[in-house]
Figure 1 (cartoon, rainbow, N blue to C red):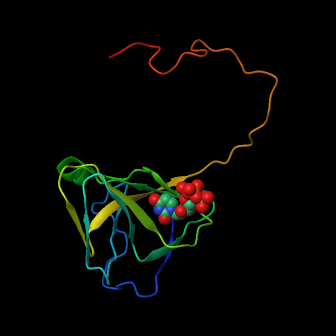
Figure 2 (figure 1 turned 120 degrees about the vertical axis):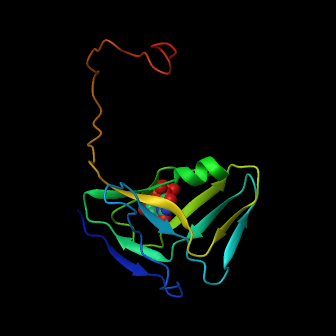
Figure 3 (figure 1 turned 135 degrees about the vertical axis):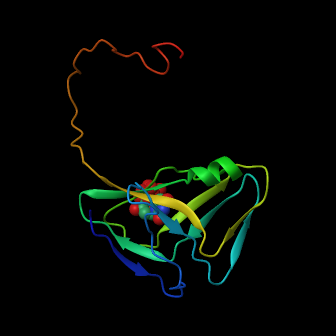
Length: 151
Ligand SMILES: O=c1ccn([C@H]2C[C@H](O)[C@@H](COP(=O)(O)OP(=O)(O)OP(=O)(O)O)O2)c(=O)[nH]1
């Protein structure tokens, strides 16, 4: 368990619950739209929108938060995130937004308080990218992009 400090944006509706896990074993905490002024967003097919959550968060160093789609919305309505998984950096202190894409065929309504995505907290390792003379040999070598065949 890791503690994440959360503050609400000025003007955000405090009645909208903070991100929360629906079950004891859930990997993602559902995050909700906070649309006190707009009430709801009618998202046309093929369009995308930055949905405010009304939150700012402070992720401990060494962790990130991934913003992932909800599979139910994806299957039933084609609602996805074009940047999935969205990356929230531990040093980011701005508004937490969710970029929602309607990849379905119908207009989709995002209502105030709807659970629009899920947040997965994950450890991060930073690398030291160092220029080298060459790389080690492996069985795969340069094979990729389907080199092992289909199925
Ligand atoms: O779904 C997302 C993705 C990102 N962010 C915020 C937090 C993140 O730390 C910041 C920058 O995101 P990212 O690094 O993916 O964006 P970039 O396009 O590389 O922008 P920047 O140059 O600001 O890093 O934007 C969100 O609120 N929601």
